[in-house]
Image 1 (spheres, rainbow, N blue to C red):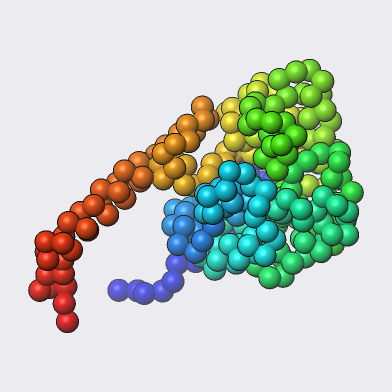
Image 2: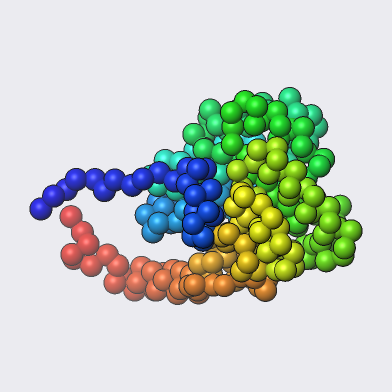
Length: 272
């Protein structure tokens, strides 16, 4: 019996462009640690996002704003070690790119050098174009992010659907075209009307990956903890849960406690 390690062809930014051109949908999930990355990478996901949503999911903050660049690098390096096939995209956290393009480049370089991630993602359109340009000129691939941009939560005041009004929708379309022209390899659209998202996807040659943006885009992304049902109090319309791990894990813990207290664990076969 062969024990040779299974070889995977690494997904690249070029792979995603080819997938769009051949009408293959792109799958994307978040991971923040080695074990989760190993599981979803082995299952065949195309892209792993080391999202600043780690601020919520892993640290319990109400927003994505508190997470630091050092913390993002820590999470990203753990994910990279658990990944053989998927493209690893790392969020630039709030405060690491907004002040000026030079700081944005320094932050992106740190992520690439210290984590081993393959690309970076940052939120915003016209207001961050110079930062994106500086990062791209350094040879670092950039994924854009428009629509609901969680780092701007205090500006909007709510996590509601964006670009429902004509003026905001027009700005989003213009920003999307500008991001493509600038050289971004892909774009995330979050919580925007499905019709608008499809229009944007059809107008661009780069992949558009949606979260709460309907089925007319080129791929989908979800937070893995939400998809696995580990976050039981989060019920957005766009979320499909494929498991209910919150209850299953709770039941397992309860059974473990019972087995320990009754001296059922460990049994004779579980001892040396």
